[in-house]
Image (tube, rainbow, N blue to C red; front, side):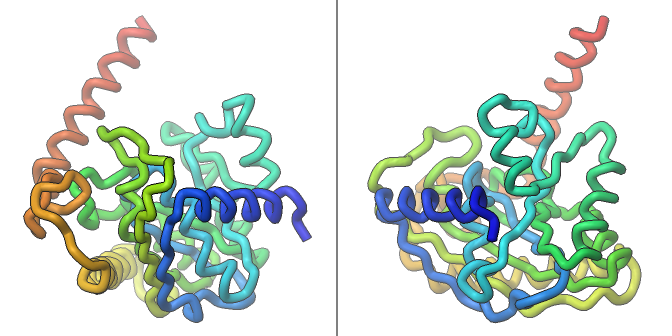
Length: 251
């Protein structure tokens, strides 16, 4: 029993009900009922991590320990909650400690949630992956569970207002078969990217209408989102601007 985590889950489900969110979960049986595993997730919105643990909870009442940027833990409001839930702070300037903590969690039989894309995909396509998820799985000797969420970007995503009222938004979550920790990190990362890209297409096909021009619809489907190439350019410009501001503060 984890009273804090159980309370957070209960509150979250009440909020989802109030918002009218309509979840469709497929492949929940692919989440191991016991033992460690890396839960690899795509990243399209600020709240998708709150939905990402649903398959594990539905299948075996398991809880996912998410890796999240340390700034969330520095907050006086969210910090104590994140630590109580045993999530893992990530300092992007010095990530070795969080990596080793995650591997330790995995070896102790925990589910660890990881975003291989590292940042939100503005295009809502699957971006290129960092190798951390694969390296963790290989070092800990645990499987990777590819998990894809579609629709979360309609609730709150980068560059658009949040929609937290009663929107009745459908959100689909698909869990693919676990990938075993074999080969090297590059090979496993490539395999993970392929599986998650295929799963995303399957979810989109089953989702329903994708209205032309809508901000949450990928350009490939006629939507208003930037293409993957355009999104990568925007990300690079944003990263450069942040680096410039950081350098100015340090002068």
